[in-house]
Length: 247
Image 1 (tube, helix red, strand yellow):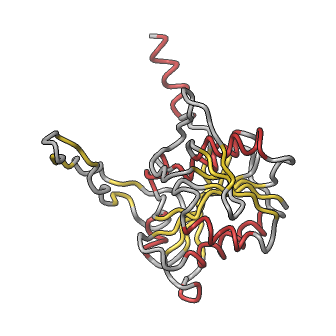
Image 2 (tube, one colour):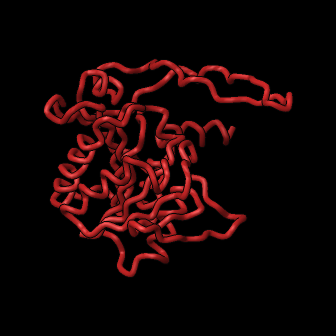
């Protein structure tokens, strides 16, 4: 098996190094990742500047682009043979609920799916980075299952894992995405030259974190696995919209 591994935290991030070592036990792995932290990049592409690729001492390929760029250039130009799977992660921090819309990690996986490949995204739900090994093991377990249970061609898998030792993990739950309240207001500050600058505030609190959501699973000590559809069409609204547009 050949795996293209990317992320949004950057090619030097701890999470991608841990996952690379784990995946090398089951597959041939090539790492193609951004040369810097691209958290929150979502599915942006670099269209107005050329992409440059550098090979690091550890063999990882560093790209001056976004996570989606990395997967696209990896599949279309840098890999001699197509990968069997695209994996994005391990992200530092959760990608739960509405956060998936902003996630460069999830976007890297979606770009893999856009290019016709099965793909998964994986995140560690903590800012302390203590137990990437737990997330890596869950990822490997799911990859092994995918070999006999392939994903539909319009879906990816989004995995979130609590930052706890593997033997403390209660299990794995298949979940729907939860929802957050609206984000907090931005923070206004002044830079050393007296100019106003703004920072995004904290994430909104969970508004839908009940039973069956990814938020609930993580809060209860389970890994959360959510199949995500690439097709964003609101199919249930098509007929109603067609009717009122005719009027």
